[in-house]
Length: 194
Image (cartoon, rainbow, N blue to C red):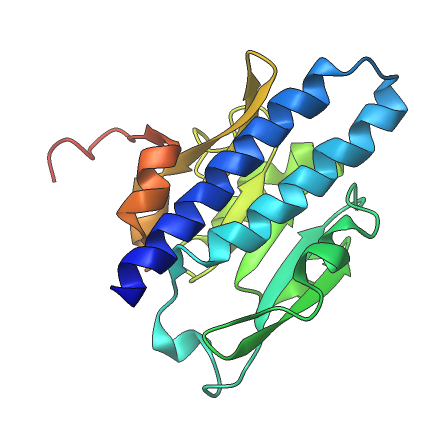
């Protein structure tokens, strides 16, 4: 019963966040002021994604080791990501954020958000994380189709996300069917034969 309540609550949170996007996008604003709510919402999504993702146990040095979220490139979040994870834990694990313009500085991260400043380096970034247990996330165009695990996009003024299930499988990441139902699934060539 408690599991059902937790599942229902989590789904309600994700649906509420989707509705927040609609409300925020409907309000007139300049590009600069619209950016802050957009990345506050994306930060909330990043936190919520962690609740529906299971990493291999060998990704953590201990049962209390933090879930580390990396931000690669010119950080668009400002303090929104810090606010989204402040004082939160997941299954007894605290959260930590690492920011860098160098991919090598983000070793040990469980999630890496690839910023727009890194658009030209996406193939290199994805190749470096291929088969590592890192959830790669971005709002770059066609990120999931290029091999990233989660890609944000906007449709009808609403924030949506794609999930590349093949990339997640290669990384050893298990994504809850609840999250898969809320996102758009990307299948790579060869996925149908599996």
